[in-house]
View 1: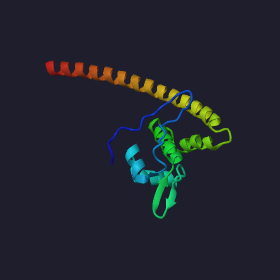
View 2 (view 1 turned 30 degrees about the vertical axis):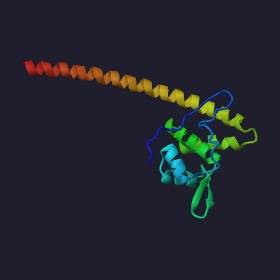
View 3 (view 1 turned 90 degrees about the vertical axis):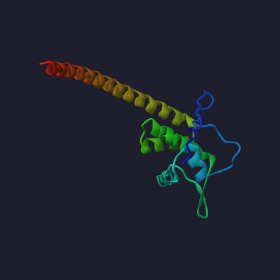
View 4 (view 1 turned 90 degrees about the horizontal axis):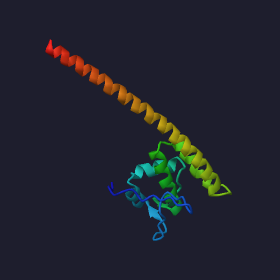
Length: 150
């Protein structure tokens, strides 16, 4: 499996694409996308089975479009930040609505803000647990030192 860096992500006011387009290619093979995104062919087949991407079939070979590549970038970004595959599916499928990105953008903003709030709360809980454990260990170390002196 490839060990190269993940494709560069971009976010601009004009376009909130999660990956830069590849104008040098018409289509991609499973090996191309596996190497580019550092995922296994098995993972790509799983996303296909789940209906998240839909490569064209030429005999036994899967041919991925620019749309499949962009959807894969969405899938991987969504997984990285903790969205379920169901949530990811809902968000990327919104792109196909008549208003294109408008509905998708709004839903993604709302879900992302909710995820940020959840992660912030979890981070706060983790910080409190670390502080409590640190204090507890310090107390036990003092007790151990006293036992060793007596």
